[in-house]
Length: 125
Image 1 (cartoon, rainbow, N blue to C red):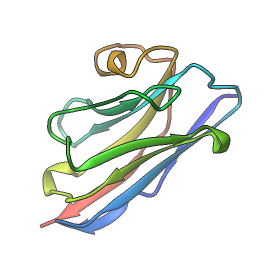
Image 2 (cartoon, helix red, strand yellow):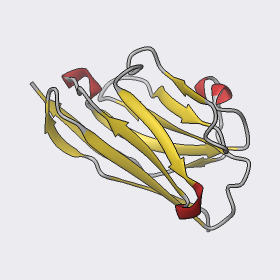
Image 3 (spheres, rainbow, N blue to C red):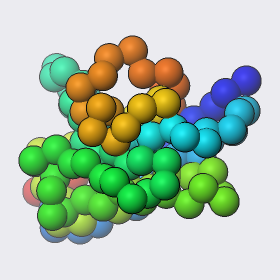
Image 4 (cartoon, rainbow, N blue to C red):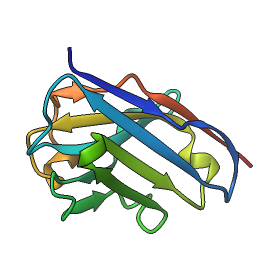
């Protein structure tokens, strides 16, 4: 079966950094954009960042632009989210997703094809 498994979450102080990983398996993701989303307690899930299959196009939410960097290593079937200058407002469960679409479309498209189980990121003040 298709699986997306996030890892790398944890507790970090404000101003610190974390690197999240999303390992994919079960099928080829050739041509698929991948993205990161997050959901804080009591809030709606929101888009964070996305990257095209080639890695040539990235798209970020305004709230994370300049602080987060999305990348992918297709040889390792893995997408990453490097999170820097973390703020308490970044605290959320972070989810990895994939779909046969563009990076930009990941920011608005619903019913994405594949989702991971999420990993908790907690930023203390």
